[in-house]
Image (cartoon, rainbow, N blue to C red; front, top):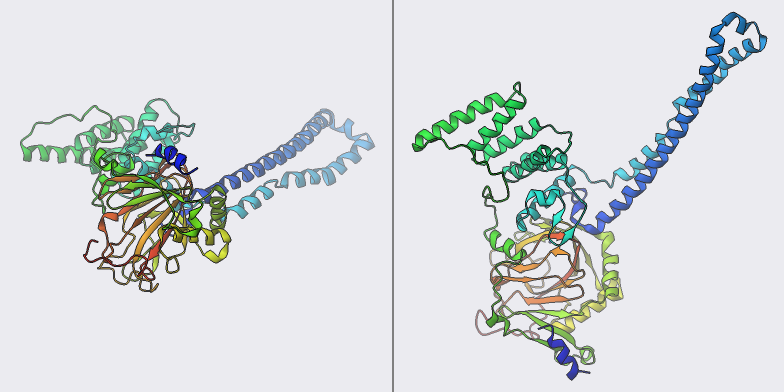
Length: 537
């Protein structure tokens, strides 16, 4: 379809842990500031080291001089003090020079470094941020079916990196999951820590500690034979371990009782190492989880040849809109039903940079509208940072709003503000509807502009891996392309919601995803998109 532009050109000479501080990791845009902060602190640390070395060199010089002096003076104390100059210098040294040395030793070159780090500490990630970053890796692990070893060695699809996870890193990942009673991920990361330790990598954490956590996590996953085998390894390493002996006896009794109840013989634990797929991931709140994640990986797409044959590209002049006559918009069909289109060259690089510049200082944890109260609130299923921009703030925003109105034919006077979002690593927005359902009558009551009629989504960056917009209901995946926009209607002409438009922003695997979107509401569209005669018109 994209090649068609060549021929047309011959004819015709584009949401959500939950404190403000506790979600820094959701925005690459803000995390870059932390890198520069860390660089500044390293420079401060080097200055502190130079100051300490200078101080130590001065103390060493004093020590060398006094050592040579005391060797001479103590070899013949009376003879040494018989000379009046020596007697005077002894008095002077003990009264003055040793005091100067004491002052030198008491100097604290760390004051500057401590002061600098104290100033920056208020911007440092906290424990909640670290936990969130760990969970983001696990989210990527699940969505893109990446095993722990791939992560620990920095082997991500299409990416060659020197970023690696040590034994201690993997153990801490496991601890994060363990503390959250997420034994599925705990097993994967404790197993990876154990493997790297068995391969000879050095660590602070001991093998006994890893086996202790891993054996209990495996037991929680219902694999008692493997829990017994791991606990036996633990006992062999540390016979005096406070829990190992008791756990081993408990696991053995439990397994014996289960085998007797099922009238089965004992089967030793599998010798296969634990990997992604050894255990079934527990179900969660999202019914279409598997379909959603498959689409994020580019699997399960329902784009058939018959459907593809119904997709076209065209020049769009907004029904002869004066602003589009000389330079019509390039429009591509992304999906036939529901109809989703992509507009090429919707935003220029200069416009994108200006929008990002305006949004960066205001980026805050992205929110969703509470369906019962209509109030904006954060949610764990939307992990990103967002900001809202008004048309009056800058000519660029006003121009983009006008362009949206021109190409859609819908008024933006009743639309919501332009929302700018930045998704960091693991940033996502799980499957959701943009419009309010019948059971949510007050979702947009405060706005007084009716339901969300349509959505236009502007991609303001390319993404190295991940970050697709997917529609699980009909199996579509739309990939970010910088400067382009996608548009679809959330409501039928009758005003009924089109439930097929439930969609999601897949987690960003590698890169930084910048988007902006405009939610266009019903009010003011009465003559621009007239009602249909049936419910699904």
